Image (cartoon, rainbow, N blue to C red; front, side, top):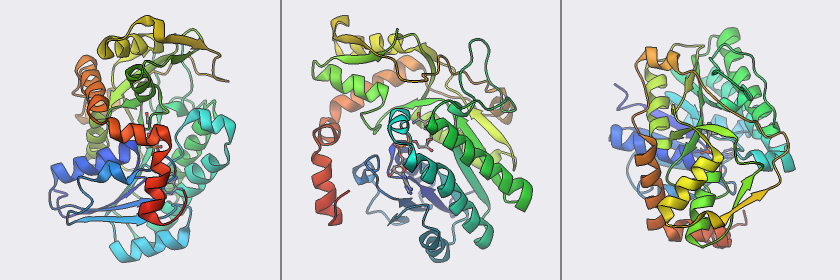
Length: 339
Ligand SMILES: NC(=O)c1ccc[n+]([C@@H]2O[C@H](COP(=O)([O-])OP(=O)(O)OC[C@H]3O[C@@H](n4cnc5c(N)ncnc54)[C@H](O)[C@@H]3O)[C@@H](O)[C@H]2O)c1
């Protein structure tokens, strides 16, 4: 159905966005994809090496907050769909310096929505997060539950989520919203728990585990997330939000032990460190709404974790460049400027 459509994917050089773009080309070989990405520290053109020279792929380096530039992109490419992955996404960084989070995760969404309203689109997908609901001791959050974001990251994502909804209610813009659990898989920036621990374990370095290690997250393999987003884009109802869960709740200590097992390391590498400020205890999503729509995750945790560890083992060059700061040099060489 959507093989000749033009997708504007924002933040497509990041972890999930780059996986989504590769998934689109595998699924619809004729599709056109415009990737608008500012290339912050988290955006890495190497994530898209396999598609960067193919027909139908267009890269625009730019900030979603730049309304004039976004308007140029709309005039030049006339996208049918806009999928907004662009965000500042790391909770720890949002605690240190929330400024860019407020800009990109709220104003950036506004800038995109305004251009969608002006130029017209078939669908706008706002990629939100389970973090908008906050922590829950027992049970799971459904889409109509109250928001209770507790970090500047989660609060700005909540702003973007509700702003997108308001454009549906107020201007009848065809908006759908997805709220996914914690993702893992290839190309995740090694500051996030799973890639950080895998790559540290590979180097015999300590795995710094927050607090008592018993915080619970639901884990979703990135390929499943990409398929879920596409499913909602094609089948969701305007104005609705859909939780995308992995149905795989684990304590951080369980994740850590699995990584140690898969990398052949011992528990001695675990180092308990002072907990993150305002660290939510447990996230849990009720995914019955998307299940009723006809979608569920395919990957089993064991299999997906094996694939993930294997990817980092086979792509040392990718993460070593980032961890050693070499990527900054690569960026300057390719783009003629500092990050
Ligand atoms: N990673 C997860 O576990 C997870 C879970 C649920 C939802 N999400 C959401 O999914 C989206 C993608 O997450 P990710 O983990 O791939 O993030 P990421 O940090 O790996 O990638 C973000 C991308 O956005 C780009 N970007 C940042 N600011 C920009 C701006 N102002 N203009 C244009 N591009 C900009 C970056 O360069 C980068 O390529 C985010 O919206 C995030 O909130 C992530």
